[in-house]
Amino acid sequence: MTRPPLYRRRPVLAGVLRQLPLFAVLLVVAAGMVMVVLEHWRRGLVVLGAALALAALLRLLLPARRIGFLAVRSRPVDVVLMGAAGVTLAAVALAIPAG
Image 1: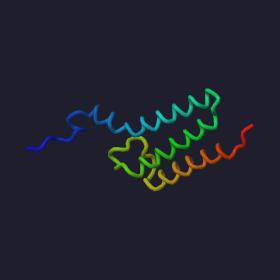
Image 2 (image 1 turned 30 degrees about the horizontal axis):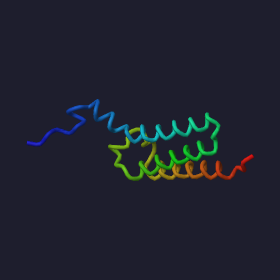
Image 3 (image 1 turned 90 degrees about the vertical axis):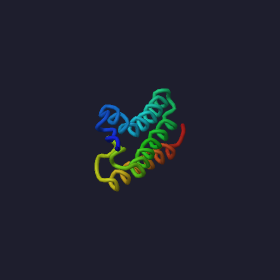
Image 4 (image 1 turned 120 degrees about the vertical axis):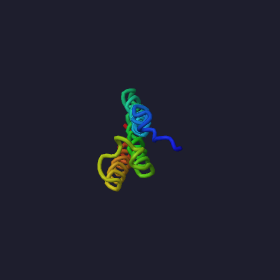
């Protein structure tokens, strides 16, 4: 006899586990925002870009049933937009001269 899937046995736990990728990305975003607030804006923006790149990587690698709210559009569109935004944000932050 096989056990029913987790979303039937414990729907709240399954819902929380589905949002773990989003929570990981939000933790990186929070770290970047703290850096910006503490006047390390360049490093903070690079960390924010890394958070977007992490979101794109998670969206690319995880199946749709595990990605939660990181899935907004189709997989290729999400990966391209989040990856491009992350790389662009980090590149712009590093290209601005210190001073």
